[in-house]
Every structure is written in C-alpha cells, then in structure tokens.
Length: 339
Image 1: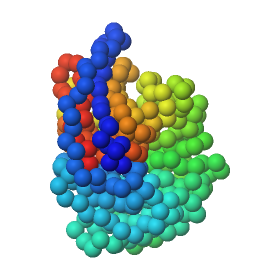
Image 2: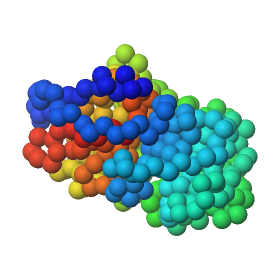
Image 3: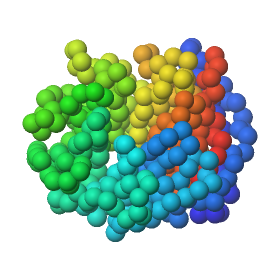
Image 4: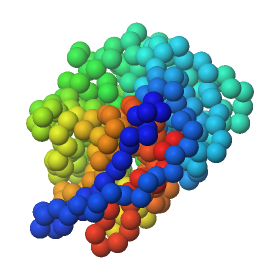
C-alpha cells in the first residue's frame, strides 16, 4: 500500500461552458498522513467539519479529516459496506449480514445490533429525527428498525430488488432506494411500502442522494468502456420526471452528492467512479465543471461533504482523499491530503 501511495499523482481539468477542456497541469503534492486503513476503503461519511467515519475491508475506523487522531470501532467480522451517522452515533453495515450502532463517546464495542438480513447489507438510512433506521440488502428486502431497542418494525421484500443504496428524504417519511434491477424506488417508511418507482434505467443503479430541500434526488449507474456510468437527476415532488443526466465517466459511477451551496458558485453535484475520477457538474445544465483524476487510487467507492469547502473520497488502493473545490469563475478540484 505504501508503494501505491508513493506513486499517486493528480491533475485537474477545467471545463468551459463551450465544452472545451483546459489541463491545469500537476497539482500541488497533497499532505500524506499515516494510512488510516490497511486495505481498501469502501465507505466514508462526514461527522463534523473535522471528523469523519470510514469503513473498509479492515472494518470501521473513526479518523479526523486532519489525520491526527484515530479511533477504531470493533465488531464486524467481514468488510464494511456502508457507514452513516446521526446524533453522535455511527451506523455501519457489513458483508457479515449485520448492522451495528456505535456511540461516538462510548465504549469501542457496538451499543446496538440490528440482525435479520440473510445476505450482505448494502443500504443504510437514518430518519431525520434519528428514531428509525432503514436498511437494505442483497436478500431483496428493506427493513425498518427502532434505533433504541433494535426491534425490527417492518420488512418488505420485492423480487430481484437487490438493494445498492438508501437515502432518507430530509424532513419527510420517505426513503429513496437504488437497486440492481436498474430502478430507483421511493419508499413510504410509515407503512414500508413503495410510494413511487421511477422508470428503469439501462444499467444497475449503484447509489443515490437527496437534496437538502427534499425536492430532487440523484442516482448513479454502473458502466464499462464509456457505456453507462451516468448520474441522473430526478424530480421527487412534482412531475417525478427525469430532469438531467450527467455523462462523462468511463466506468461504473459509484457515488453521488449534492454539494453544499458554500462549496460551489452555482447549484452543483459531484460524482466518483471506478475510473479513478471525481467530477463536479452544474446541477441544472449538466455541464461538467471540474474533473480530478486520482492516478493510482484505483476504483473510487464513496464521497462525502466534509464542510463547506472540502470533499472526502474513499478509494480501494490509497485510503481517503481530502479534496477541495476552488471557488472561482472556473471551478477546479484539487487534492489536499491523503489519510
């Protein structure tokens, strides 16, 4: 892993409104801290502006974005697939079929376990009031849990609905879910039933995110050799139509994110891909504003907004990358640190 990290370089590309590209050349060398993980990182989530939680093939870690302190959460027997947080708690899902809850200020062991899925758990979403947890799995089911008691309050199964990601709609009882059956579903968590299914895409839907106002959602597609790999913007409130597509990744797009308004001049979204690139797009027009290639990082697995000016990106080969979007007329991404 050290050898791979020593070979990592980065370059950025600016995209003009006309569609032309301008290479900015080699970026400044990022700060390199001791590796947080000893193997590939599969998930990352921001807790505060200077703290994040990450999961990988070597279980769950709690590194700060500054890279100076580290706490390990021990309990899973296999690779962690998803992490999220709410109210000073961390939630993690794993290939060991379990979901665990951890107290940030408590003991290193889990404070709650959610048991009931028959296959790897691939989706986690916490309700806005942090009372309920929704989980999804490759066993075709979505479950709702009481966070305090660990009781399963509902279980819904749909044939061929291999869940890939879950995201709760802010201030609403709805949960957005992506699936290997190429669809995006909206669940009503009160009765755990499907409230809406968007038209199927051409490829597996790998991840999703919901805007802070709850009006829009993003989904990402699998892809190969330039076919597929797009991100899609959907209307959640009115027409529930496809609003925009973002095309430019050459392999599976693994993660998507609505960027905080302080992170970009115009409403923007970010995506990461197996092609080792992170892209920033203008939300409404679909124009690509910036691309960062993390050479040697391998497939990129997960994105998170750390604060109003930084992104975190989990990679299979070289840990967690801290990225910054320069706020100016021509947006540009740069890598500032590696954890």
